[in-house]
Amino acid sequence: MIIAKVIGKVVATVKDAGFDGKKLVLVQAHVLKDGQLVPGQTMLVANDDLGAGEGELVVLTQGSSARMTPSMKSTSTDAVVVALIDRIDANDQLVFKRS
Image (cartoon, rainbow, N blue to C red; front, side, top):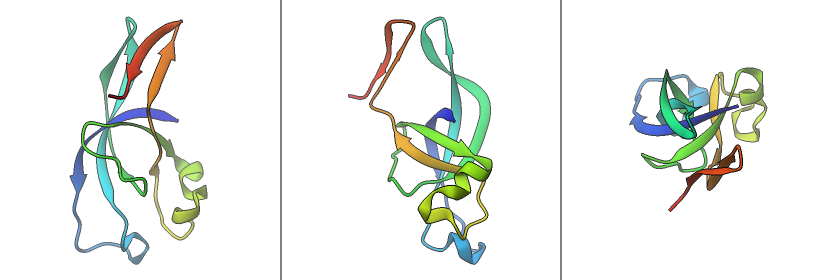
């Protein structure tokens, strides 16, 4: 799984029928460096049925795990938002807390 920040949305009017009614978001993976979450170099387009907003930290799953989520069974997807992050603790320190 990947920690990522939603940095935008993707609008596609012409798409595979499996994506009808699906929200697509642009996310940037984050990494833990010196006790802080910082942007990584990876950006992905992910399906989002949870309603993540721009600027929110989320958990993504990819590959075959992404297709196991109930709403993605008939969608050819590679990345899905599976959680909205409230808090992250690492190395006995608070790294992130949703405000």
